[in-house]
Image 1: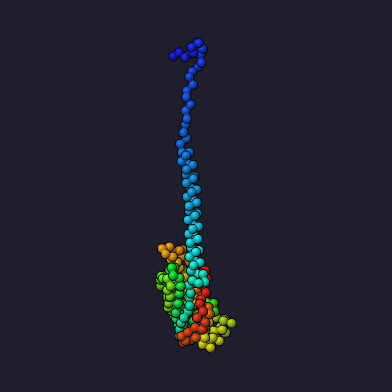
Image 2 (image 1 turned 120 degrees about the horizontal axis):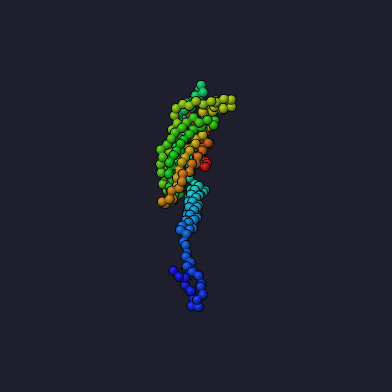
Length: 221
């Protein structure tokens, strides 16, 4: 085919084809993916911080001084507490009052482990039935320790036991290991693991009360 010439017979060469624009696939979707990922991460971080703030608020509402959950040992019965041949035999019962004074907060006691200690050594253990405690409610726990347990008392510890045996008044510590959840409206918090220590107990053999048990037990996290 002959090349085109101008009107004056000059040759201008072949016609220049129009510029073609190429689209690179995937670039726009990649940018969107990065933005969406950053947005998602910000949402997750915000949600986590909001939940943490809610948990802290609920715990503060529960354990601030005017609404603090209270634990009291109200009655104790000790009918046996003998130590011979490194073996402690015991028969001990506690009544523990738990008072929830809050108007809008309930408590799930998912785990309750009761332990008894003498001279820093554990001799009694009982796992209690889980329960839910409603608003402004008082619950009474019956804690029973009965049996025998190897215990080593030497030196000052043995002297202390003999002195208390002579007086008929024993220093025994009660500890409750809990796993609890708080309920505020329809919201339930994560699980907390407080310990309740009642270490001001002077318990009389064959008696029905504990000196100092009117004081509330200490709550530790």
